[in-house]
Image: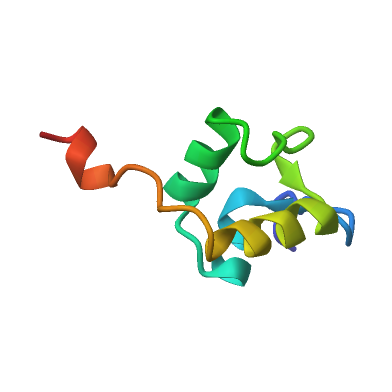
Length: 73
């Protein structure tokens, strides 16, 4: 038997990584939109269905956030 801990997440809440995959929006862009208050910050780092829908709506109307490569220079 494995001693690994399994974390169960509510079906209505998602991690930022999962939201990025679901919406095809880079996680850095989602974080930028949160920082600039384009999207409300998720509760305890999990996203609701409503927040994901808001991200999808913004996807075509806002420019992406800063590139991760730009931070490394």
